[in-house]
Each structure stands twice: as structure tokens, then as C-alpha cells.
Amino acid sequence: MPIVYLLVLALTTILSMFLIEKTASSSISLDVPVLDWIGKHSYEIYLWQYPVIYLFQYKDWNKHFIMYLFEFVILIALVVWTNYFLKVFKYKQIKPKFQKAVLACGIVGFVFQATGVIALATSKEVDSSALQKRIAENEEAIKNKKKNAKSDGKMEKAKNVDYSPSGNSQKVSDKGLFCLGDSVMLSAYTNIQAVYPDATVDAAVSRQMSQAPDVLRWYESKGAVHNTVVMSLGTNGVLDESTVEQTLEMIGSDKSIFWVNVYAPGVEWEASNNQYLKELAKKHSNITLIDWNSYISQHTDLLEEDGIHPMESGADAYAHLIQEKINEVMQKQKEIEEKANK
Image 1 (cartoon, rainbow, N blue to C red):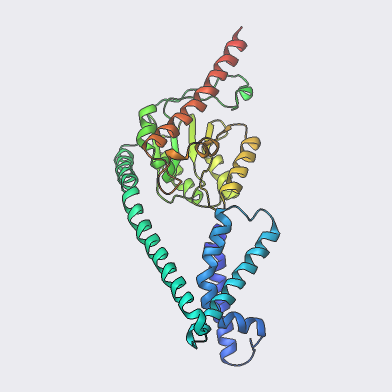
Image 2 (image 1 turned 90 degrees about the vertical axis):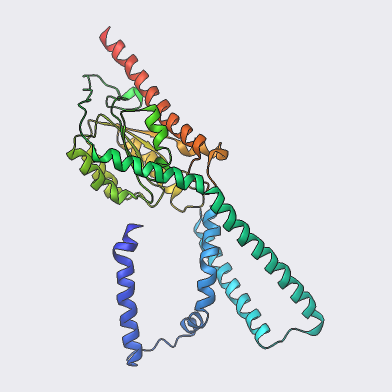
């Protein structure tokens, strides 16, 4: 969450400095059994906490508060277990009849770990090369196109018609789309441009919602934000409500917005961001949700090794999913206009 980096870490540092100063001068004491135990086992806690937290997030086990307690119990159990075996090996307290078995387990475990690390390192290097190359090429293309960003005058005015039944209350146009997103959209840049040659696409690696207003402000100064906007943000962090509302206000309630939801298994905020986007579309009648999550979860073979970014065929599916939803709403709006003109 943004507040962690904006405030909490700074406050934690100040509090730590205060405690160090006070305990050093002996004006207060932290000689409490629980704190003493944590201090003595802090390294084991440090080693185990991330694997445990990641496992629970990846398996999506944290749906109920009781699971956080269970997670904590497992962490403490692993710390105690690790500390016990460290003592056993340190003082050579393994009974002779168990020494060969423990050694065999250790060798087998080491072989599995070494094999896993080597396989992971080599597979990532091979499997990610195509994605990295595509992203680098797309970044360069966006950079070059941005130098010449300007208004092309394609602003289709909305007619005095109630478009709400179409799924979007504002006039939708496929001319001069403005697309703003993160690396998922970036990986599909050329595919989007193939479908919409006159679209303006700005996507970047690790982009979060907090960066959207500045990017949008720059393009608005060039007159490059037209009737229909496609947003694809939420992979890299929590969608902060105040920033989202600020961005929507900048875009304007007179424009139609299509928001691509998130597919990032194992990421803590995937479910909450998607739920928020669903509620956001209900709250703002000019927002239409594009359900990338439901589609790609049934076609995971179209994803790269990281399980988040689409490979070339997946990027093509991503671009066409956007096109299908826009065309669907446009067709409904056309029918509404025809009915209104009768």
C-alpha cells in the first residue's frame, strides 16, 4: 500500500532510533521474555517469514482472519524447528544410529535444492528472453511515438442520447483511443496498434496507479486524450481510491472508459483490486470493465513463464479482448441511436 512507503517506514525508523537511544541510556528496559525470544531468533524469523507469507498468498489461503493466526503459528514452529536442529548439529547431539540417516537426508535435500535452483535460473533466462526483448522494443516504440504526440482532431461528439443500456453512459469511439497501462499492456503494445493504428498507447514496466495522473496530464496538454480511454493498471500495487478518483476526474465524466482488470496469481492485491474495479464500474456509469482475469485464467497457456505477462499469442488475445468489448458497446449504442431516430 502506498502509505507504507510514504509514511510507515519513516515512522518505523524514527521509533527504532528512539528505542535504541532510550535502551542504551537504560532509562527504559526491553528485557521482556517475548521480546528477548524474538531478538534471539530474529534471523530465523527473517529467513522463514517471506516463504511462509508468499505460500499463503499464492494459495489464496488468507480469506479468513484465522488463517493469519495459522500462518503465524507455522512461522514460529519453523523457527523453533530450525533453532533445534542448529543446536543439534552445533553440539553433535545426533545419536550414532541416526547419523547416517540424517546425513543421507541432508545429501538428498541438497541435491534437490541445487537441481531446483539451477533449473529455475536457466529456465527463467531462456523463457524470459522473448518477453524482455518484446518489452524493450515496445518501450522504444512508445518513446519515439511520444516525441511526436499531438492532437489529431478526432473527437467524436456524443449525441443527446441515453447510452446507459449499452454498458457505458458515454459515446464510445474506436477512433484515436488513448490507452494507459503497466507492463501487461506494454507487452501487447504492437498488438493493440495492429488493431487500432491511430491509438495512443503509453504503458510502462512496474507502473502503479500513483503515476497515472502525471502521465495523463502530459498527454492532455498535447490534446491526445480523446473520447475513449482504456486503462490497464492494478498489477503492481493496490488501487488507491483517492488517486483513481483523481484520475477519473482528470479524464472527465464525458468520456467513456474501459478498464482491464488484473490477472496476477499469488499477488495479494489481485482479488481486492478486481473487486474494487467491479464496484467502480457500478459507481461510474462511464466505466466498462474488461474481464481479462476471467478470460486468461482459462487460457494460461498464453502466458509467459511468470504467469502474468502474455506471450505473443496472449498479447494478441489481450488486444482483441479490448476490441471485442469496445465493439460490443459501440454496436449497442448504434442500436440505441437508431431506435431514438425512429
